[in-house]
Length: 251
Image (cartoon, rainbow, N blue to C red; front, side):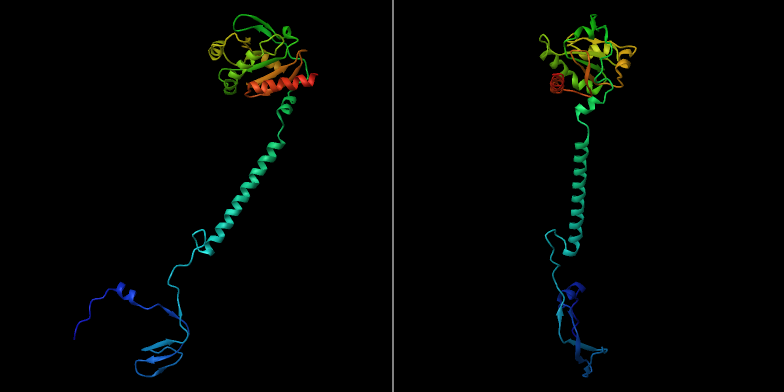
């Protein structure tokens, strides 16, 4: 007898016909008898209505996944997008409802009242008195060299002083808050002397003005009344806008 060739299982599987699925009614048995609807040993059933199982993969949808798997992901994506929209709308509402700069200024207890006394010897040795500047708008700046908002504001303050150096222009005076004259002198260099700066070693001035932490800037009108207060860093544009509002309010 001629031996059968050695065939691997993979080769056998590759040659198998497509699996047939369906209802089997009859077939032929190896013993020659006819097979009924029940299976018999040694019988090869013949399909009455064969249905071939699909050989290729399930067609994916546009997302690259079967439709049944992609639909839940699309739903999750819509939920996430809706959630982000709600958060953004909430932020808009909060910002719209927050007090404006003018409203924040009006909350200071000094606004609308006569400015507390402010006088002393500047870091350059000159005498300064706020009362001597009646007829001018004066910004009183409480600052320190270690204060980050103060560091951001300083270039703009210097520009503001130069732009308003004309007769009758607005003025600026600085008050040192919890800092040394040496540190402030180095911080302001080379613009030391551009505008008066008063030391406040005992924090007496800060207490009189109710200053808790720099940077805080107060605007005093030509009659000596506090008109506005701003916390944090400012720009030249901010100060000019405050002046414009103050002039309109006093007109």
